[in-house]
Each structure stands twice: as structure tokens, then as C-alpha cells.
Length: 216
Picture 1 (tube, rainbow, N blue to C red):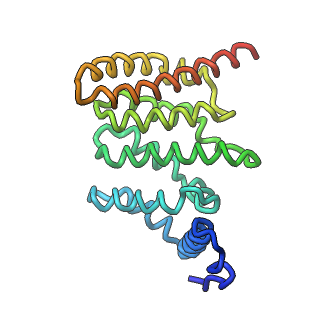
Picture 2: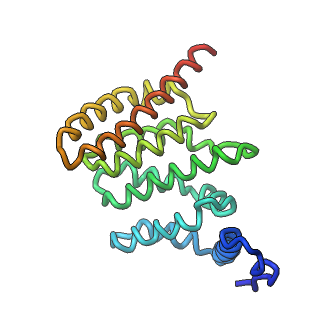
């Protein structure tokens, strides 16, 4: 790794100093071709290895434009779609994959000067995300809701695709009923209420997007 300039080490704000060091490290790792190797290893038949590699990929891609551009150029989003749509895959992989999709979409929302990633509005990709709401794992459902929220907020995603192709309205209603049942369990009530609050927020954003599209 390149030496860290002394002036950076003297910055009083530890957060900015650490961020610089991390970005410098990620930049060097990307130059060594580690991302491509890790992406191939995500497809490993050894599930623990695949999970560790996906976590490593996520670390190189999150909040890093160069990492994201390389990830996308090497069909990284298609890799994530394969994980999301494979019903036989380990749920831990799906949780990390859907989290990474949400993170990528969220990054698009704060980098307004950049064109949005076209693949994030692909209807088959969006359906692979929405279909995960059918999972029986509520932790996964929660991550999916956060991701759908970010995807809905993108300018390039279409409300009609979420409704007509992905069936988001029906998925949200099913989840509402499931959370209603879950809230009947005393030890799960607070959690169910938190997730329902998130679900309701997603529903509002969805309806607002539908309203805007119908007015255009």
C-alpha cells in the first residue's frame, strides 16, 4: 500500500482520517484485481467461503465509486440477481446480497451528479428483490423493505413495473397481515411494530410514485 501522507495522519478529525486510510486501502486492493477474484469465489459450492467472499466484495464496493463501477462492469448486479432469485441458496447469502443492492441504490440517491445505474431499474432484477418478501425470515423481509424503499426513490425505476410486473402492492399487503399476526406474540410485538412502520413507509412512497406516474 502507498504510504499515508503525514499531513493526513495529523488531521484532528479521526473519522475523516480513518475514511482516508480505508479509501486508500480499498483503492490499492482494487488495483491488485482482488474484486474480480472475490466475485468468482462468491459462486463457490462451499457456502461458508461464498458468504465470506460476498462480505469482502461488499466491503470493496460500499461507498466506493471506483469499486462500484468495476463491480457493475463485471456483471456484479447480475451475480446479485442470481443469488436473490435462487430459492435453494443459503439465506445468509440472500441477506447480504439484498443489503448490498439497497446500499448501491442508496449511494445513487446521494450522488445526484451521476447517472443512475440502468440495471437497478431492470424489471427482472426488481422482481427478484420484491419476490423475497415471500420469505418466512422476517430479518430478510426487513432488509428487503429497506432495499425496495431505496429502489422506489430512484428516478429511473417505474411505479408501473413495481405494481404490474413485480406485484409490490400485493406483496406489501401480505406482509401487513403477517406482521399483524406476529404482533400478537408478546415477545415479537415491538419488532413487528418497527417493521410495520417501515412497511407502511414503503407503501406510502410506492403510492406517491404511482400518483406521479399517472399524472405524467
